[in-house]
Length: 291
Ligand SMILES: Cc1cc2nc3c(=O)[nH]c(=O)nc-3n(C[C@H](O)[C@H](O)[C@H](O)COP(=O)(O)OP(=O)(O)OC[C@H]3O[C@@H](n4cnc5c(N)ncnc54)[C@H](O)[C@@H]3O)c2cc1C
Image 1: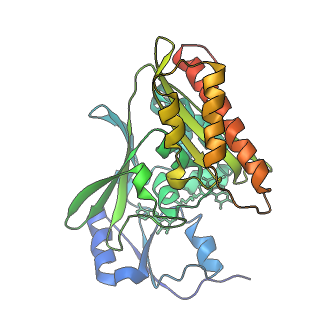
Image 2: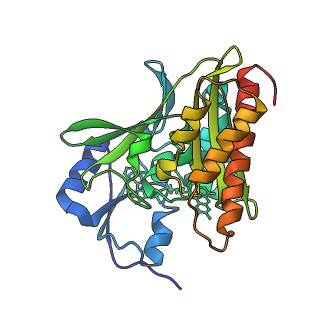
């Protein structure tokens, strides 16, 4: 039986309380949200926090709302709430499509968006969504609030810019009227982590790509995004050839590792194919087609 190393435990009653506890206990303290990533890491002794600060009572961090022209999602919002959100679905199909293929209902009922981003697993799905949509991360400490672009938030595998006395409190997604978005994932079996996955959005001006975002996970692109393919596509016609060429740029940018989920060539092939499919469906949705 795998058992975590000994630790102290305290339930935070407010964000300020959680931040005060983080400050008091220093770098050996960790917050625990859904626990679906942290607890397995602790059982394997890959994480050994001396103090766990439980933030599950912080219901004021559990929301999805429109705020100043953006969709604001509280860090304690569970996967299931994102999956079921009519507000998110109205603006971005990408959320429902990504959430449907994240783990299983047990994990989705407890796991949170904040925990997902902060775990910074290189195969994590919502980080690809955040990168594609160019989200903004809101980080709080007892001395104030700062914001970081989702594409700067990850500092390498399992590393983020959240400091030891800070918490991620909110993720903000710009609203882009008339845009279309989509998520494509290949997994070994239902509920598994991605072999590769891609999320995209496209905004059109006529048939020209006015703006687009391309997020990728599990294929070793930096910051879960492929800016070179976005730069290529912006200002071009949303034709099959141009979209396929953007997919090829993602193939070339991918630097995956061979593992039990597949060899390098296969993952790079998937990067191209999934980006191409996601962009094709995003553009069709931006034209108002039902796909
Ligand atoms: C069987 C299984 C299958 C899974 N499959 C997938 C999958 O296919 N795709 C996918 O994307 N994910 C998958 N996951 C991960 C799942 O999405 C987790 O819920 C998620 O990674 C972590 O969320 P959590 O709320 O459980 O975080 P926790 O485990 O509680 O925390 C994770 C880390 O984030 C930190 N943290 C949490 N919240 C905050 C905060 N607000 N501020 C600062 N730090 C914070 C914690 O200290 C910890 O270091 C899977 C998990 C399991 C167990």
